[in-house]
Image (tube, rainbow, N blue to C red):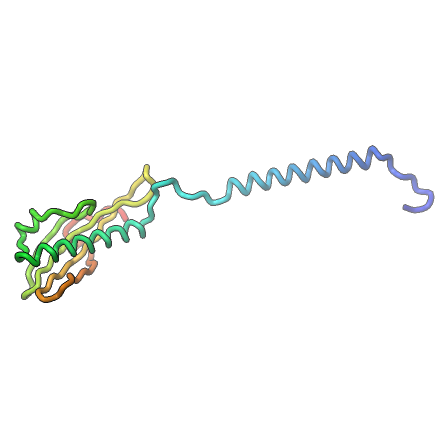
Length: 156
């Protein structure tokens, strides 16, 4: 302070500190509320992504291909036998078609899954081709265009 200057009353200093502290607290509360409102929230329980649905369909296709290979070891697969062949539990297998290419049996089939939140699911379809060749222990599985299965593709 300069000589001869009059010191402000203590009440004024306390008032300035109180107002400044209140403003600081108000800014902190507004910032906290804004951060909580804009912070990303996890999706609802049971929500799946499209990639998770596609992975599940691929796993279904692999299990079904193994079941077809096991059924084809005993006796050759026919379209009639394919219709009566039980689908392994839990697999979402759709339309199946059987063709023969030389010594190999080719089965084309669709798999289905859904993704999204539990209240708003979107269905998707994939088509796979399994080639069963005599003398090969494992089937050959390949994803093919959905039009190959002759099924209408649901929204994906």
